Image (tube, rainbow, N blue to C red):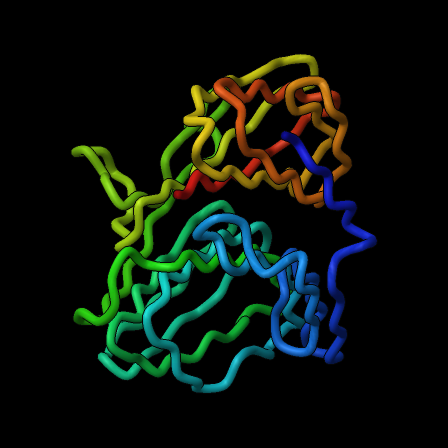
Length: 232
């Protein structure tokens, strides 16, 4: 099954400094048919104004992955972690038994990002935070694992969930394939470029919910970037 969730039909909240689209129920947006996709609980498409951001707030028992598309986000938390994550790169916060953090766009331009929450396999544990650079050129024409519950010796950021977060960049007319477990849930978004997923067309920033497929073939109609989560 492949279900396209058009960008214009996503939940929407415009706070002035934050323009957010919600793929799943979040904050004041509630749709009982969109409470998540497998263990994927949140996928927010955020635009944060220059010199603005999220003041300190708590999280618990959630794996929070931030994929920065343009600009940069700066993180600080109650465990003393801090760092700046720039465009194309990724940060992960494993909230564990509780953490307070803040995220600010300290740049002179708007920052755009995906924030993805995945339900962990178990509750509690010591919170941790990490970030890594993932040069876009290194994922041209292939999937690169950005975060994983089973890093398998690669350079993926660790999360406490049976899930993978991946990205690929595709020149127009090219394809990339993912061998999928049909019992799992995959969710894809192309922040840039029109794509076809197993022949089904999606526009930039549409949500693409997949399950029951043994192979996922993404074709770039335009030059495209694709972000995918594969979760239980």
